[in-house]
Image (cartoon, rainbow, N blue to C red; front, side):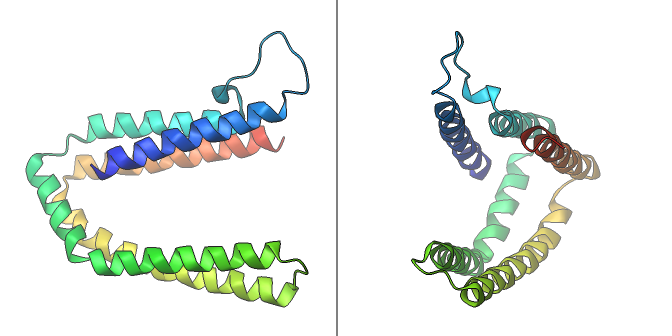
Length: 166
């Protein structure tokens, strides 16, 4: 269920970002208007969505494994919720510091440092939860997950090259 929610969110973001990107080029009247998938970001997001669907299919997670995953995540629900809340608060603080009428470099840097600390705390928690989840999966499933991450990283690298002409 978590993967489905994540996948649907990713799809909505993809569509939104693609529409924004295609709207930016609307001033140039061309015979064929670009679609969201025609933009580097659109290709990145739609590719990730496709890889997520492939991962779901190839991982072959059993009902018993899903139950164990839910149990582990439920046991950390309060910690995960607190980490997520902290990230949201710190991210908003940084955004507001950047968008201030009279931005102050020291305030922006402090907000950035605070967000970085929150990201680090969430990463430590993620590592702890991952350690508890690892025994739930087979070696083949773990390799499938690693391949997914590697494919995603390669996709981001391609996007950076396309989007910023590297």
